[in-house]
Length: 489
RNA sequence: GGUCGGUUGACCGAGUGGCCAGGUAGCGGUCUGCAAAACCGUGUACGGCGGUUCGACUCCGCCACCGACCUCCA
Image 1 (tube, helix red, strand yellow):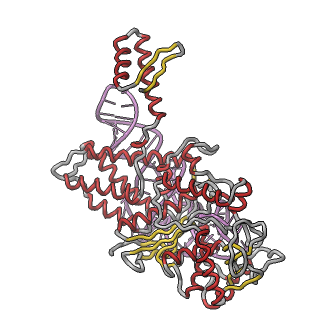
Image 2 (spheres, helix red, strand yellow):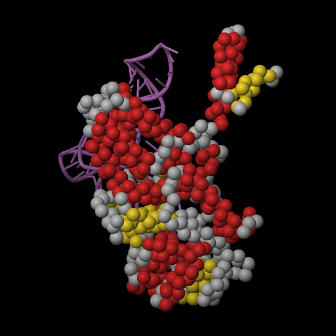
Image 3 (tube, protein in one colour):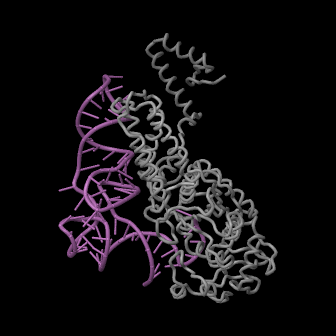
């Protein structure tokens, strides 16, 4: 299968041609959310970034297996010994079963992803459903001597691993520096070294989510699930692993170490990391308390929001920046995105009105070529959009008669726009589906006020015409003492 | 403190050793009963100081500022 896609590999820090291991198949694993709270704008970034990748690979004809997990257990709040499971903590706060928390926020996540027109992954495995696989991985690591057990907990032996492999190669860490910079150790630390990380944790008696294991009643460490599940569904070695830059260390570094130690081969051929969304120049994160949830963005219900922004505005806003750059949230930027988005969508209506000319004054093939060059260059969506806006200008000019399009070019252009805007960028036209009650109500107010103007001027033929025409389409007007009311049949 | 990244016009945001990013906003014009849309035109943008070069926003050095990671985070 032919492709000219180049992607930036975080492991080598270089753009590399994408050559899948087993064409026509391509495997992608992306770290999904820990479902203990509402989905926020930051979550939209990786979802949309890797949705773009997924869609483009599908467009190229690959049979893609896209695995995006749900973390529903084992994600500790801070250092392994002191930490509390995020989900357990929230469950206690909300007086719910842990699995009720998981269900609640997973549903929110899924709904928001659908609103953003993010395609469902091929497989969405949950950590709690893969305890056995995680235990098998722990056993394998123990057997190979890369892990050790202390008091029913099992830790990964980073020093031992570093003898045969190189710990820190993904994040650019050097072990000695990690040793020098690690923060103060807790007194009763069971780990041989502070940078060792938990594979299996023995649960305290009050811990609700726990499973039997050869070592203790306990639960798996956070990094383990991604190794176990990517391995299960994509194999020991797979093509692409994605996630946010903030996961590069320690999460992905640990994952890389575990998988490499267990199987003796490096698990991932291309690591891809999306950058963060910032707010006032600072990373937007739940832990920093400066996040805006997607539902708040869609409704406008947040002190920082001047208005509501539609899901496609958010999607467009994210696609207008390259995924490896930070993008700063502001009302001004969102409003600009909203306008740009509308302009792009309007072109789909305009193109239908264009009459084919005998000859074209523009070169559609050249635009197509540029579009593919942009997306092939490490998914450069902003450049792609700039070429699509060139196409929009051509469409508008052709409708104005200042450019001409022959019938075949016109068809090509329509096709090009459809492929890139809808299929690959995953945008969709929102206005078509927006026939809601609010609009009807506004329209009725306008009609009623026009009729009032006519009646005030004693133009009764006009006011009666309005009433009878409305009647004809099933709307009844009633002139009550309190004013005009209307109802539908 | 360590590691890495950024600083682009009113705002957002690409990119490149010499030529146009694109979007939004502004200004002028065409069109239009008015408005909107659309189209055309328009802005001496590249943090500071040096250096390399025929030529640097783009390469190198230093400085300043901002941020990310080093603990959980998409």
